[in-house]
Length: 387
Figure (tube, rainbow, N blue to C red):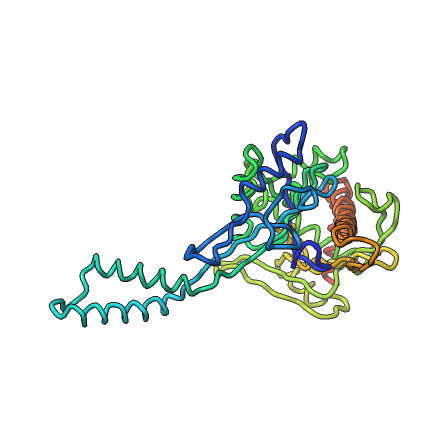
C-alpha cells in the first residue's frame, strides 16, 4: 500500500549530507529526472529501476513542481520492473531447440557447447520478448525541513535497492536508518542524553551494530508498555514536536497481537499470541521463561481518533500503520491536482501525528528507563509477572 493509503507499512531514515544552499527544486528535479524509470515493456531487458510520480506510476517526468514538490516535502516513488523466466520453462524450450538442431544436423550426436550457448541465448531472448515485466512500486516522502525520509516498504531487498538508487540519484547524501537507538537520541530529554550514551552497548557507530547491540531498547519498551496497559493507566501528554498541540492527552496501549522470541541452541524460537487478552497470562508465562516481546500491536487514541500499528521492536519499523481515515473529496470547483495535493497534506498530517504520539510514548519510557526509578519500576513488573 502507498503513502496515501490509510494503512501502510513504513520505516524512516535520516538524510545525512548537505543540501544545496539555493534552488533546491532545480537540483532535485534534475537528479530525479536523470534517474527516472524507463519502461521495458517493448524489449527483452530483464530489469529496470527508477523514479516515478507518487500516485501515478506511469509518469516519470519531474519538470514541474506539481510532479513531486509539496512545500517542504519531496514525494517520489521507486518503481522496479522485472521479467522472470521459470527455469523449467527455459529448460523445456531449450530441449526443443536442441532437438531441432540435431535433426537438421545428423552428423552431430550432441549439440556442441558453443552452439548450445547460442541456442540458450536465442531461446531466452524469445521467451523474454513474450513475457511481461512485473512492476513493484514503493513510495518515499522526504521532509527537507527535518531531514526525515519515510519509505513504504519493510522488505530488505526493497530497502537495499532504494538506498542504492537514492545514493546514485543524490551524490553526497546517504540514508541513516532511524533504528531504536537513533530514535532514542532524537526524543530523549537533554538531561538524560549522557545516560543514554552510557547505556549504549554497541562498539561502533555502524547501524547494524547499534541495532543488534541495543535490542534491549525495544524489548524493555514493549514490556513497559504492556505493564502500563494492564496496571498503571495508559494516559500520556504530548511533549514531542509535531502537528498535535503540546499538552494534549492521549491513550496508548498494547492490544491483540504480540510476538515473543528467545534464542536457544536450536535457533530462535517465536511465539505469537493473538486475539483479545484478559491478563496476558500466556504472555506473562513466556516472559517468566526468559522470552522477550519482539513485536506487538500498539494503539493510540486521541479524542475520537485512532491509530494502530504493529511495532517491530528490534528495528522500530511500523507495519500496518493505520491512521484516521483520509479520503479524496470530489469538488467540481477545484481541479484534480489541487484535490490530490490536499489529500497528500491531510495524509501527512495524520501520519506525522501518529508518529508524534509514538515519540511521546517512547520518550516517557526513556525517562523511566534511564532515570533513577527504573530498578523500582522493573521490580513492579517482575512482581506482576509472578502473580
